[in-house]
Image (tube, rainbow, N blue to C red; front, side, top):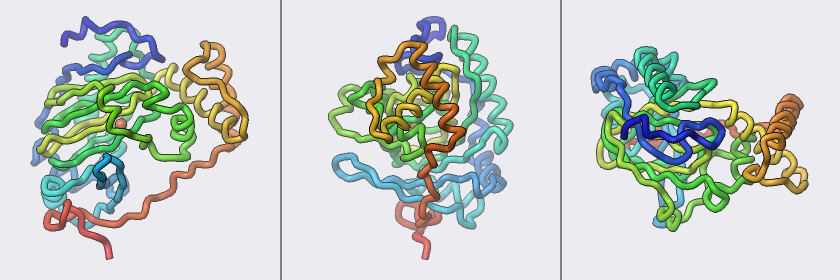
Length: 304
Ligand SMILES: [Fe+2]
């Protein structure tokens, strides 16, 4: 799709006001087996998130988390290719500067081609995932551009309305009282925009739009770039304030119905509330239950 067909956004300076794909020019050689083997060998163990999602027949999810373990980079890559793993390499700007330089250039392309797209901060993680891996239905607190680099995957993106993304739930996400999974029903799929992503494509969606992903039988590599805008900060500040009020049993006015000044007032309140430390994060460490192994079921060897 030519970039010059993009319409101005109406929602908080997000990249898009409806889900859509873009082209990108990130060099696929940066995620070849050779490049990934050497990256995995040197990447700091504490910056790995190693996840394994199990789904029941209704699509409801449970999560197991793993430790990096002692595998070499090549062995770890094999375990991902054989297993059902979802691995995030966090803080990839520092961890993989050669790739990050190209992500920065890709963001410059988007800013040039999408008038009004003004991210004030962006950062990201490199995602390596198994051929059969799936990510459950969830919503991210900030903006996301997913740059797909290798393999094929399908993404479902749902409207960020009350039926699909309840405000009370986003309040708890921005207050860090809960992880980003949301209540999901199979019937939602009829409301989704669906894209099959190929290397060289990126996809964006409005702030807080829920989404889920299934890999299409191939080892996949993507770069997930998170961004903030002034609009997203206002929005999340309003959710934070509403969440504090709701926890105190007060009635709250829907963020979706707020005027600009109502939003700004709640954002201002949120900065004070955060300084007061009213909402202690409840996101503790997860219990790690496995380490990657190419020989184990799902690529996950249970820890003793
Ligand atoms: Fe996400």
